[in-house]
Amino acid sequence: MIRIKAGLVGAIVVAVGLKMSLLAAGSVPFNADEAVVALMARHILQGERPVFFYGQAYMGSLDAYLVAVGFWLMGEKVWVIRVVQVILYLATLLSTAWLGKAAFRSWKVGVIAAWLLAIPTVNLTLYTTASLGGYGEMLLMGNLILLVALRIAKNIEAEEQNKCLWIWLAFGFLIGLGGWVFGMTLVYSVPACLFLVWRGMGSRTSSTIAKRRSTRQIDQEMGMPRNLTLAIVGAVFGMAPWWIYAQNSGLVELLRELGGGAIAGVEGLSWPWQVAQHGFNLLVFGSSVLFGLRPPWEVRWLAWPLSPFILAFWLGVVFVAISAFLRSLINRQKVQNAKGLILLMGVVITLAAGFLLTPFGADPSGRYFLPVGVIMALFAAQAVLQWRERWRRWSYGLVGLVLVFNLWGTAQTALNNPPGLTTQFDAQTWIDHRYDEELIEFLRLQGEKRGYSNYWVSYPLAFQSGEDLIFVPRLPYHQDFRYTARDNRYEPYDRLVDQAERVAYITTHHPELDKRLRTGFTTLGVAWEEATIGDYQIFYGLSRKVRPEELNMGG
Image 1 (tube, one colour):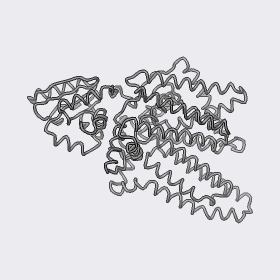
Image 2 (cartoon, rainbow, N blue to C red; image 1 turned 90 degrees about the vertical axis):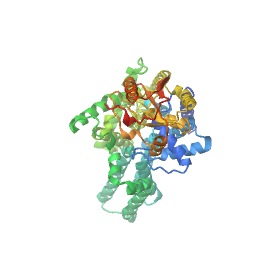
Image 3 (cartoon, rainbow, N blue to C red; image 1 turned 180 degrees about the vertical axis):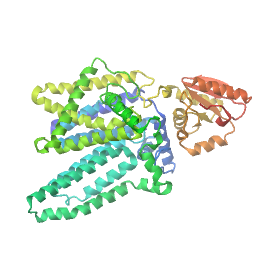
Image 4 (tube, rainbow, N blue to C red; image 1 turned 60 degrees about the vertical axis):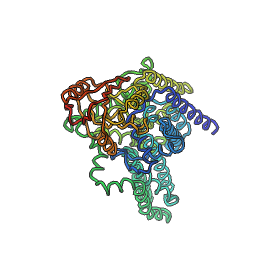
């Protein structure tokens, strides 16, 4: 047990060291989604109580509340947001180790998986360092849901499901809370519920075959409705913010958001072709980012001298996991730890089905594969221990090879800054935020505190200036001039800009938009000045206030 503890402590130290190194080097830019979380946290401290992430009703505001606690304790700084994410990830790492013990009855599986998560793929590193509003919480809650499901299944098999009634309440609460925090926790909740139904039916079938049922068995069966009621009550309480919001805003819209309605139809394909495209995204783009072969924001091979060996390793892990899973379905008595394997594989299957069949499959960047990244660490740990029977301690060298590869890939992306480790997979949105302070100083010096920009500028600028500089996202950033009103997330900012007597415009990486602004100002007889600071093009000193509606910025 001492070695187990030492292994876990070592993994935690290495994980913290990697995160702190990336943050100290400024390799993770402050993105707009993260800025929205930061602004929500600030507003929470000012008395607001948002239920969902500003502008989208499928991701709850728990992350903002956690960041608000961090701001209250340590001040309103960007690094505080990252500290919250690091704490969440450490909890995920430890719960993964615990999950390895629960699913495979081996602390060795848990420790090896923890090390694979200590220096993870670029995809996992990115989305557990920068906040997008709920991914860190989703991974942690997912692990907890699986752990509780395994505990309940163990109680069912021991005919002790009525012994710890609180665990049914906890199971429901985690599912409900996860449903509010991020609907993606369904990839854990659905297989966990099906798993317990399967285990409950299996236990009852065994009792029926035995024909003679003990008083204890009958008592356990009679108590099942009560246990399910407790789980439902827990789910209702856990999802209370969701229900309250639904009562005020309508259930249909919430369900539409949960199902990816915000991005439905963006591909412009019929449903069969969408499924085919999603399948391609899953097999080609999904697998390459999942194995760490490329960063999620572009197709660029990382640490290429090691890539073939890493690909072979992960394909071997997949083969071992699928083979064991199929054997478990045929005869679980002959497969060690079959039940835990089936539950974990259920998460992978559920996620794959959701990716294929819903609009979310249009996004192959990598963030939707995060749950599989954690599960794959467990599968890899189990495979390494299985290979150890043949190759002895040499199998541990494979773990070392994966860690070296992941570290190499992370360093490679961190040094390529900008963009660094960015959550933006459209190159047009890669902004060099090292010029933000200079931009803020310039705008204040010129007295330009209100105006218009795009989504990727507006919210980082608002937070970093202490909401002194408010530029609402009313400008397009796509080169084809596409724009969605969903970019404009916070209505009070609109009122501030509408009430302003003067405005400025800020663009990034959009020469054609700059031309249209100049043409529009000239046509309206408006004088202006221009300045360039890093990636920012500033139109300021306008002789009169000009609203975007007065300019020709259509596609």
